[in-house]
Length: 524
Image 1 (tube, one colour):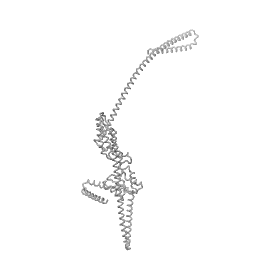
Image 2: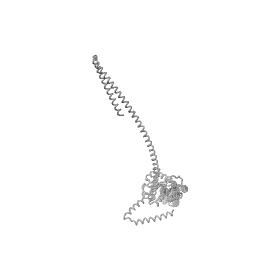
Image 3: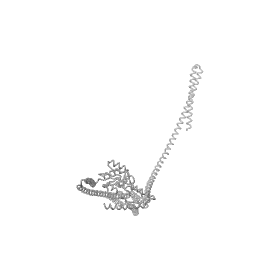
Image 4: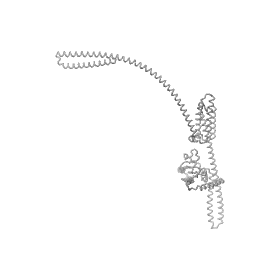
């Protein structure tokens, strides 16, 4: 069908081309005819021309009609072929759409089946993955617990006990903490009684009860043993031990249809541990506060005894001086003119001493009456604590160096060096202000009452100067005993060191110290 259509189109084009040629010939003949118009009087020529034109016109008309006829036939043939092709194409397209719709319907159904199957499988995999993740975490906790038990806990779980106390009210005391501890224990026993402490997957009652009792006995035995070791500084380690016991017991309980301790019960026992630590810490804090109070009372009593002794000595000295002055006056009255100048000098000297004794007596009386007057001291002990470690404290003693010597008597291996003694009418406030200025420099970040600071001496001096206080400063640390000890240790390495003589001196010094201690106790 397509070949015929192409042949018809070719024939039509050829007919049109031939018609165009004939029309061109007619045009040419007409031009020639016009050129020969001047010869129209010639009869033969005109006839010939007319005959030629007539023939040409007839030929052209015949060609035109033939071409039109053939073109019409070709057009009809092409339209018939095109219609046949259209009908055939529409039929094929309809069939194709039908088959395509069927395929799409089947594909959609298959896709739905695949999606549904994939969704179910994904849910199964997700559930398996979640269960695997949970089991992996449990196994990891169990492995950590086993490693801790085998290798020990060291200081990996140490936490500052002060953090446990941060949540407590300012006036929360040992009694309240004890009540909270008692409440936690009662809650623990109640959970066991109502069956919320542990669980397992046994259906049969006897087996279920036996399995639960097994894990509870194991866990409680471990926790009770852990709680028996509560101290003020091991809360973090004990908490980890309880968690490790929880992991190990639950891991072992899997052999009994997943017999396990419940998380809520673990939380209750951890709460019990927390309040046991809090109660222990608060009890220690109360003891420490009582110790400090007693130490201050002893210090005040010692200062008071010192004031009273100073008063007695000053009064005794006054009495002796008055008697001496009375005697000197009597001697002055009896003496001749040559000796009176001698007694006048003696009276003047005695009067000066009496004035000093009265002032000393008055100062002792004033110190005894004014409980806030005292000295704030800045001292160091390089041999005991190292460089740039200073103690800032106060004393109300008439002789503040006596208190500093006491600090270096037995509690530290070397004596303290004194860098400053600052007299103040309100020594406690001055001490408190200096402690506040250097709070970030505390050596002991837990117990600020220790009064030691890691700070440059120049920084302390600048703060004191900025407060307008007057003090005599010694900026270097003599550390005499420490440096002499280092020299002795170096000498011990040489062959010439006389160790026997050195030992004898040490033993003799020890005996002298014992005698001095006995004397002090007798005087005190």
